[in-house]
Image (tube, rainbow, N blue to C red; front, side):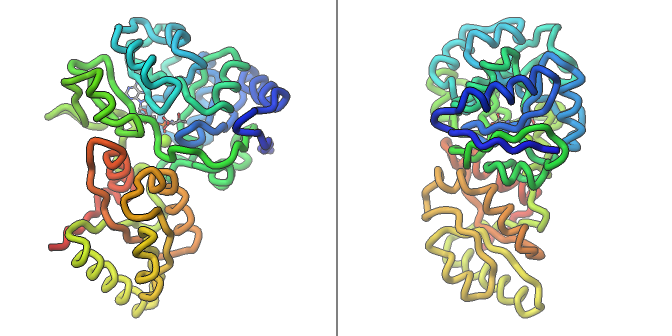
Length: 349
Ligand code: TXA
Ligand code: MG
């Protein structure tokens, strides 16, 4: 039912791209790699096709989609008004992991925008994504290609493990590069606001937007402000708990928890740095190794794969050290980890 087509990420085969592009034009669903995570694409101007995305993912309709286009000029097809700042950001960060929220054009179906007056747009950097969108000749609405609330997919195998039989084609271009979803910036609010941190960081954005805001405005309903940013996003099946605090006491506490779980016969997973892996294995935990300590690029690239890997072993729960938010990639990692943990955080003193 679901066709898996291998594709060269550095030089996508035109015949493979043409086949997937035809599927999009005919109203089908195609999963494809972007530099962040795999997306599940449909023709953004075809409300029926976009509706199928929601069915395939079990995604609630109040969660709007990002519209992917082949180059910056194409955003004029879906955005009504494009401020100078949008063009500046486009020039600096596109193609790349940045999504801009702009006023929508009326031709964009309500199902894409969750009925709202804005539309989110992005020009992805991945060559397969760009070739596919260009060949389709239509803007492509694409959320991450996972079941709703599961960790986003960073390999084609992650996509098929969630969506096999529910979508038409998966373009398998290997593992994605960044590993966490694009930065979402709302340019319709004053000042502009980061709705979701990502690899285009606060530090990078402030060069263009000195008064950049982050998070939901004080006193607002966070769900309405950024509809998809529900707290249970990106969660593994096994409950995840984060531990914060000075490293020695934090590690002692986590290892003690592993020991007591093991004693009760409950398999426990630990998401750890390379340096910590040995100690957790000796304590009896099932480990998934994120990255060498402090290597946030690798940690981001591996985060979702590690969560899925631990889930697949059938552990009853997962523990991990919290990552402190910063003005760089740490903000995105802290955000995704906190959501994956549904906010469960234990601070050790
Ligand atoms: O990196 C990414 O952005 C990936 C790849 C596939 O491009 N896509 C992705 O899509 O992460 P998704 O649907 O999982 O997350 C998109 C989020 C929504 O949950 C919502 O928070 C925000 O973008 N969003 C979309 N349209 C919006 C709008 N009009 N206003 C505010 N937020 C919006
Ligand atoms: Mg998603």
